[in-house]
Image (cartoon, rainbow, N blue to C red; front, side, top):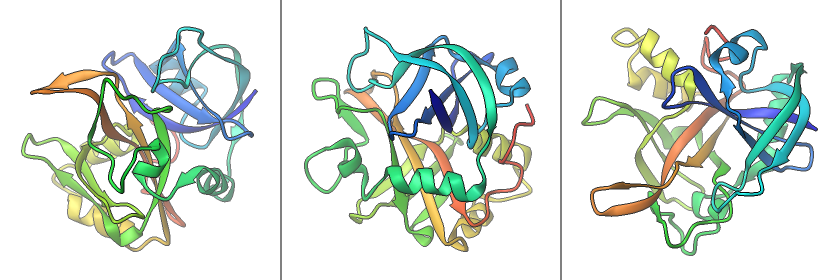
Length: 231
């Protein structure tokens, strides 16, 4: 099977990264048995737009919403997408809104989808207006992202799991402000987000699957230093 990698996110274990991609039929696969190591991601290399070929088999113990979890074997690097090819993958997969992508009733998807009502998938692509999205620093000092989707539903201060964006922000903290990063997006023609659901956990009184931003992709220009793998 051939996968175009669309998600590269940090994991609790610093020696592993969570990787997901889309096959030619539009199905998403996320190897969790086993995760890709930091060393594999660096040496292959693996980053958004990388093409991998191998055997990717959905796990028999999958439960909604994490139906993309799979086993992997015989994986090899098969090239890198052009920007146009990667754009086409995102366009083809994109939903109008977060609620539509997760098939949640109503115009807005809750930040925490209840444990008792999991959606049928855990990663979607959402196309947003370039001037309707921005980076934030939350009260906790952590890197966040806010946006309006195509249904004009507002999602504020979502955690950013996107490895490359987190590395970029960390390298330039105090030099490149989140306002400057937001202005970069505002000058692009198209912006796509990979929005994911974390594993079920409780925060305060709410237990469920929490929204996070797995990927921030802009066209025609990407953020400097976020295309490729520097370790």
